[in-house]
Length: 451
Ligand SMILES: *Cc1c(COP(=O)(O)O)cnc(C)c1O
Image (cartoon, rainbow, N blue to C red; front, side, top):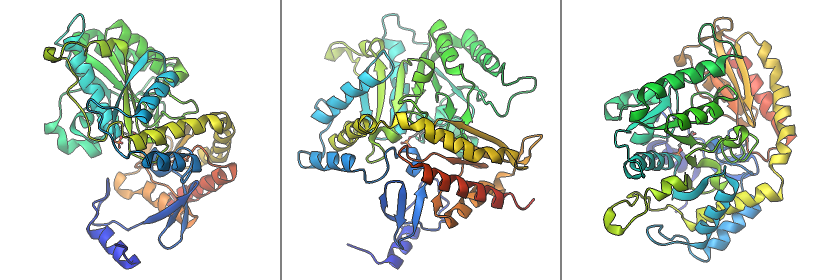
């Protein structure tokens, strides 16, 4: 069945229930194809993909290497269950991820979405404390951050902290110990950039010191809290948090679903601070943004706690139908191969510098509170008052207005409240970066023109 354009628009409005979208106000944008960093809609309009198709595209759309890997696998088998059965691409991918990831992570559990990888990590941590050599069945709590985002299933929402999205589900959630986000822009009174790391680590230590006997794990987005509005943690915080979790015998779950796969300039964000978590969640860019796949990597210590005889009931009783799907695993293997073949990471410093130089003048703008960047993620925060950092009311939709304006310049962006950001595919060219930055700057000027 092929629909005419008017029918596509009508059914898209009425039949498709879009994620995080107010359907009463939805204006269809229907992408028919894409080439490299450019999306092309059904009317032939071209938009530079400034947000990597929601944080997952890595080497551009339609990359011949990744497309070929999927096609080749398709002719062998499209799906094999991971319940007691395996397939070559899923095996090869696990071996490769273990090779590349921080030391100590030697076992890979597959699912399809980021949220499911987080759910698996939460349950593994919980079960670990009940089954490990020195069982501590009181360890049932998780420490997480305000404004954290770990996905939209009930477990991942329980450790998430985006009030806007999550408040209504409060009665359904399990209790979580909540720390303020280690935010480098909105620092608490008396705290400066130079002592912020120590300040936030003290807060973490207080919770761990007091409650570690009840705490199963700390759940953290390394370095940068994405959905919170690209909140950046102080350098050194992640390493400090790792040391504290070891000191207090609490597991560390690192959610690298956004910051992994090269986004911060290294393949894994944890690498930048020499950190090995106990559990590491990957998703989004794992397949280069081609097919749904996520993974939870675990240490051998955790893995061992689940070994035993069938009748011991120590098994991880958890699984997702498409976990370890061979098409997705083939895409992920090709995605990792392209990192080597095209020396993707080695080319990033020049691109990061270009983004930084282009956006730097915005720091002088009277309604830009902060211009911040880590790796290939750059964010501009719009504020009503630059001195006090007073935000614009969210209802004013300043971010949305800025991004709508960018579409006039053929650039597709999506805001996070008052934060407008760039997270382009890593293959983006310098010329394309210039276009993205110009459109963002015009958008910011336009959105802040009225008081
Ligand atoms: C997107 C995201 C998730 C959830 O991934 P889904 O594939 O959307 O379920 C979890 N954690 C972080 C940090 C994310 O950015």
